[in-house]
Image 1 (cartoon, rainbow, N blue to C red):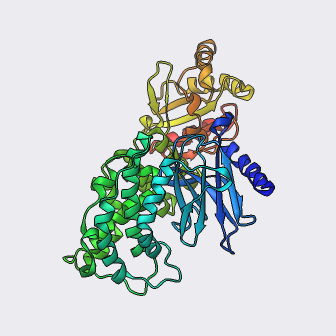
Image 2 (tube, one colour; image 1 turned 120 degrees about the vertical axis):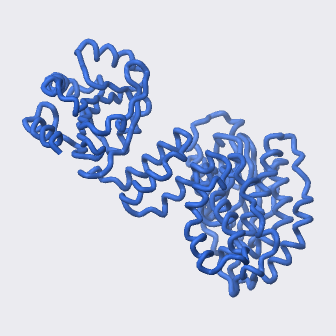
Image 3 (tube, rainbow, N blue to C red; image 1 turned 30 degrees about the vertical axis):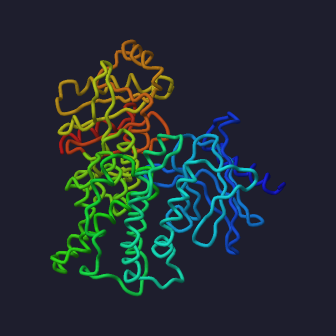
Length: 471
């Protein structure tokens, strides 16, 4: 018991780092018995937009591992050997304060009452479902060392479907879970069925071999809400559920089949087959992993950026683009949009067709303030030139908005004045700005001329501006 308590303390550090809650009654403990000789460790993950986000890791000691953490939200969590694998991934539902105990038995698990832990009604409902579908999961997901193909799996799936469809709705005291569990079952069955086709087999089905289950279009019920974003690797479930009817389509020639498979991601993004806009945006973000070059990501941006419907999605995409962009001359500018003194949203791209000289600064920054008189003088030199814009972007915190406005007046600052506030990462991260002031120059074509341009006080900035205006 002493060793188990030590494990709890170690795992608690990982959980506490992810969440600063301190209420004792919100602490959740997880105890796992795992007698597999090769078992070494497992991770605890929360599910965010179908991805498994790590919370803590626990080592297997004396065939046990354990976690103690403060769940930052009610929902689905996973204990997994590897975040990208469906094998040895166990998904449960936890509320702050919920406890969980189970033992891993080969390719299955059993809820237990280890260390005085009482499992919740939610996780007993999940375990009952798992008991039902395990014979299919054992063949599709835990394929290692087993001889199983579509020839035995398809008939078994057909035989079990009536029982699966008749599985009762959850009747726990938690109405929120009861509703979400209907979706969970649907997603889990789709994953199990799909994995039979995604894993190595001695024989794979031809179009005529597929049973009715694979011929149906399940995407409307899978993607009508954002529920699938709470399911581990749910975006894979979407893509494979789209591909299955293609595999089962006997009318397609081999060339047509190959073409449709090759353009599956594009079709999912453009054909409105994913019904929920937020889910489509997440699929767009996930598909960027197939892009390998800067020109490629910029082409992808032009085609699909409009699919990003939440500020969080838009910010994550900017960070993805920034990984490809070295901000060297000639690269297309990464756009940003912030409010001006009147609260109007103004973007860098609004000034395409003009040369734009950008000052990234803050009211508290001494070197920034030292450049302001030089910037004002430089702007006055081009005051009558309609082809150049001087833009300043403050990265002050939102609480200093009024202080910023007052400084603009006090110092007589002109040009386009923008305030990023608490969204400063939207310019700092893409342009890899680690210190201010930072000056950047963009050409009339909307491309980078210099992402670390000379300061207004330098002797070379005017020559650079003149040369850029002539292009």
